[in-house]
Amino acid sequence: MPSTLAAGFAIVASLAPGLLPRSPLTQALLTALLVAIALAGTSATGAILRQFGRRSGPHPRRPAGELADRGPVLALTAGAVLVGCAAAASWQHTLRSAMHTPQLTPAHWALWALLSTAFLAAPILLLRVIRRAPRRTAAGALVLGVLATIPHPFGAQALATPNSALPYTRSGSAHSTVPWDSLGTQGRRFVADGRTDAVRVYVGLNSAPTLDDRVALALRELERTGGLARDHLVLAVPTGSGWLDAAATRGLETRFAGNVAVVAVQYSAAPSWVTFVTDRDRAADSARALFTALEHRLATLPDPPRLYMYGQSLGAWAGSAVFADPADQQRRTCAVLWAGPPAGAVHRAGATVLANRSDPVVHWSPRLLWHAPDLSATRPDAPVPAWQPLLTFLQTGADLLGALDAPAGHGHRYGADQGTALGGCPTHLAPK
Image (cartoon, rainbow, N blue to C red; front, side, top):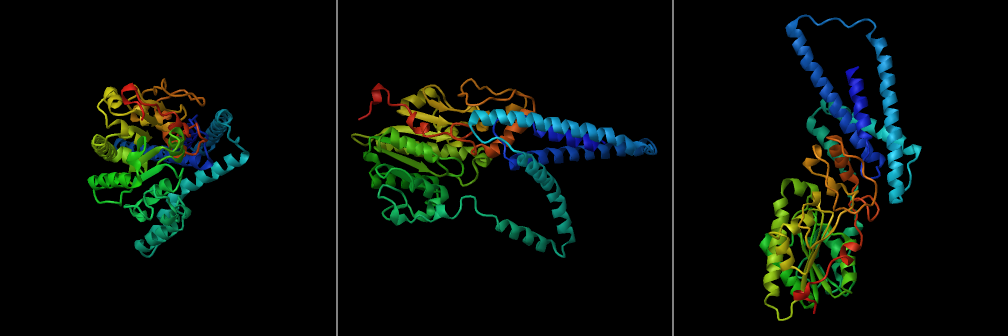
């Protein structure tokens, strides 16, 4: 009975209100995880109690009617789960109406139940396969073979753009000092997009062996492409995977009518959250090295371009970390724009900060376990559930999985206003 109650409580907790519309997959992952934790906790607690029971005396026999007593517990648990599903459906209806996304159908809940069951059963079945296999290495090879059949999330088309088709003003082109193959998936996507009259310089993680070499290569590319002769130069700090939002770059090119160069240097290929948790200093070091090199180079030019800075997510945090304080940020740049900064951790004074209230990246931090987030600087785009200790932390963590699946203007999706909302130069740094 304790296991039944624990599983029911975990299911209801997984259905608590979140920030974003949930897919059956995301909801099932959260449900399976919480149920597994609840069952493991119940099992561990029971084992401890049984151990103490053996020390204190013989374990009492179970009453003959215990099985019959499970009926009301099962009914109570099932009723609680149904109420949880109804409340979740109502909240999802509210969110989807605010974000203009399709409403849920009965198929959503059927698929959720099926996937939740599958995720809970999969580890047990996998362990049985490994134990029964003649050799564990054979079982491991079987698992790897199955994983190898999963399509690459970026698909093959993103890798197929030939460098000969790129304009002269792009890294990776036939004239570039940066090899096309070294740009990585995200770099190739970045340089192959956008207006042909604007400059896009990207140096991949594999374009040069060290950070200093990558920064020097970026400067040479700016010279080659004519980026330093443009009126405006934007240092764009990518996320941990090297990704730059295409909407942001197009917005920047629109903002400056193509008379702009956008330069970026990749510092990691790991997912952004992995870099943020394990090695965020690498992101800040890369942004600082490139910014400092650009400052020194521009100081030698008789008529240098005006320097701006842009970053989204971890890129916003890393870009802001370049500066000692808001005054330093304002003194050394024309303007900066930070989009979706993690837990709002950026210099805000004098900066343009875009933070959707429904963005879990803006909400999430360990402090969310015991304290409600400060949403005073966010733009209201959808209703936000009331903060609850621990539960809000778990729900926000689950929403991180689908943060980029929301429509533009919601979640961690920001539109072309990332570029068009970028401020202008103050009087002492007026444009050319």
